[in-house]
Amino acid sequence: MFWLINFYLFFSQSLHARSLKATADKLAQETNHIGLGVALFGLGLAGIYFMLGKQDASTKMTQALMGVLILVLSPSIINFIKGLA
Image (cartoon, rainbow, N blue to C red; front, side, top):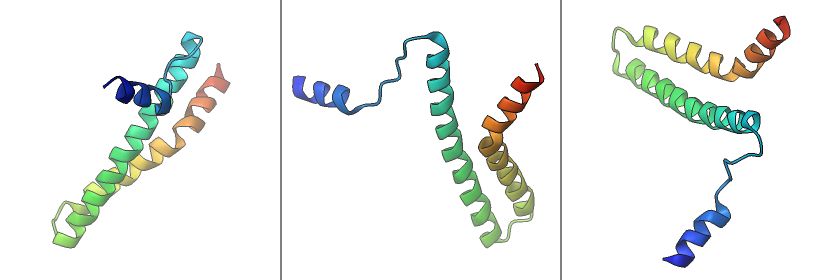
């Protein structure tokens, strides 16, 4: 058990950082990765709705594409807002 814990700690990516800002940046990066995974799952689900011929498939696809677009462009959006201040 001891070796398993050391193996996990050795190969896991450290989320700890030296400052509060660095910690927030790492958390935002991980959240972005999780969000992108969920968005791609939504895109796949919308594709399945299209294949099944559901009536609200176009709405689901539009919502999924807008979610992916916002997630991909979120760093640019944040930099633009920071530039306004």
